[in-house]
Image (cartoon, rainbow over all chains, first blue to last red; front, side, top):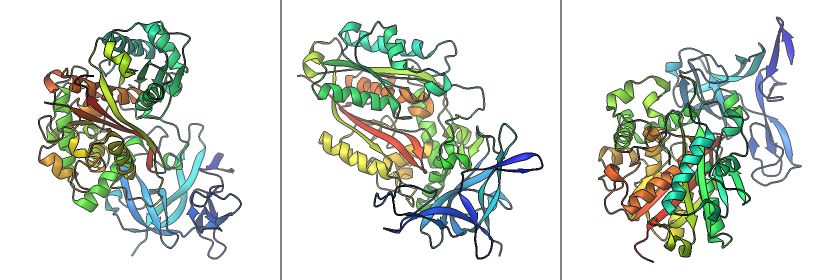
Length: 143
Length: 376
């Protein structure tokens, strides 16, 4: 948790993102089984492919991907996200992994299956106590 | 079953009692002849802050002392309760048992069902219709399925609902009215989604020997299967992979094929879901679900009537009750007691329902296949 402008910031999941030692950019943190190579997000203790528990390593995931599917929500959900918003799934390139995500940037109606997108860290919503829930989103890559 | 709908003045116990009492009277047995009870309820602990609903409801009809268990499998709670009842009788442990489902999900206008936020999906914006909306998007993308085809399923089911006194909705809609109703999550509109509902349904399950002596026409359980989502991270979202796996098991268990099914009740919580279940249950090839509805094949008078009750879309979806209500509907058709919505010469019926979600996939799914009994 951090405090900023008297508001507490809480990550959506502890340890779900980190910053790359190479370019300082944000990365999702997943698990990689050193026995079979299977990657998972969010992190897991036990590999669902080979069922071993001592072989799971943390791994920084590729921040780029392609949109697999999405929808635009128009009615406010119980958690209080501001509508309209888009969410769906991204297929990360090279990691052979699909992750759920909110989409931002530009007009929601311009999102398309197959669009190239990149990871950003952003506020997801404000909870009932006024805390900012910080999460990840993907946005279209320009150009 | 009770009529599904808005029952503000009735609680879980009232609804449950009504359904259970009807089943008991239909079978012509006494409450104290029942040897075990199986209750399906998904959200009572959260929405009504009640536990032990099975025990509470069955005490309403005078049942005490016997083994009673409460089952939560999301939308498949009721059908899972029915399955446990069947296992109890088929295993030889009990001669006659009761299975029922009850739920109250009617909320203030415009409120979406809140099912907690344990899953990452929900934390980043997932809503109940959202995953289905994405499946619709992929199905349209891969197979050219249209918005009109999906809307036709709602039109069909609401029309069927007008023939069903138990249906929450008693109103027909045109394709335009479905398409132009408020958008919930693109491309699913309000009338592409099932409503929140209150209601209950119950069934008596017994051995052949006991069933012979009861006052109502019994129906035979040919197959009962339960499965869990396969959680394939990069699954094809345009199909329900679990449907294919489970329907194969169910057909093998029953010794029939999809072509032998005379009517089906499926998990039509959203129009696209029914369309995809046509494919997953083998009523048509993958990608051809749109054509099946276009060709009127799933109407009551069609080749494979689906949702003659009006389905979840029109009849309503009190989550824990729906699985048992589907079975009640099939039973009525097999007995020839389905009134205006009767499917002609119904001999074999299929009930399919799925519930819950995790990582964009199904939680639990059940399929039951029932057969008319002509004589013992």
